[in-house]
Length: 391
Image 1 (cartoon, rainbow, N blue to C red):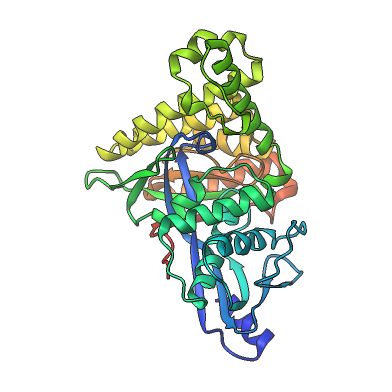
Image 2 (tube, rainbow, N blue to C red):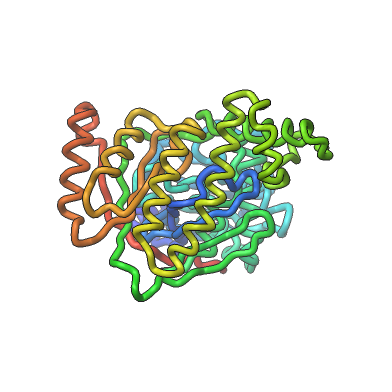
């Protein structure tokens, strides 16, 4: 790994270990976890590596191959407010981990991501890879749920992204050749094995060539609109509605939405429509996967992508174009934006027999629409993988 070479160059010695966390895809269940919906997802065989060694003096010193500036602070004196750079995710992780476990040993590390940034939960992956390494050097043996909640709190509380636990759960619980089917309301989950009768399937990642950050995108606004819909529906129907920041649409029965949807502002109604229909798609998709019907699962993923465009109203022109190309490409079972849909990438579930023709067609048509992105656009063939290995 390049991160190991750079560590040797920086410190004049080999790292004592390499921590890894995979990226994830979520073909069904996008933009519902923050309001306690159900999701399906898979970890993939690409992710974040950190070549690292313990620092007994308690100093955390990190460099990233994707960003130029190094970050340094002491494990017992992490800045209380974010510094507005790439390392904020990791500062938040230290603060949240220290609430749960005693920390004394620091970490020297070099971080390497194996795919471009945007849409594959790279923020969650770098946090979890870092937490795994930091726990290891401090002799901490966290439960999977500890890691998920610590990583989630780092993004929510420190970075300021109103995400749910989809990303973290996929990257921790996933198992190769299994679909993770998770209910974020009570964290119950099932790993559904790939049916032996399922047609061959691989994962293709198409990067638009434009990176994005959730904290600076419209992501938080969409979440607020959905919560506003839930709050209003409770009020219209006479339900107890409590505090706004504790309101989630999962608490609002579908029939309440159907009765009062016309009283909602148009944008709020659209966000709720996406949430309820995505909930249905996830349940149907899990059953399709269970019986080995990858074509139906893929069709539902395409539907999910369409709802993200028209109801959730995300998607840059580049991602919408990639999505439309995928819908008319032979050999692609289904796919959608990967992540929130603010730039980043699209993912596709595809028949390996069509791999060459798919890659050629998508690149040709996409670069015809956006010729300035030649050299920035890229495509990658991936497969399902196990989640992170915890200390």
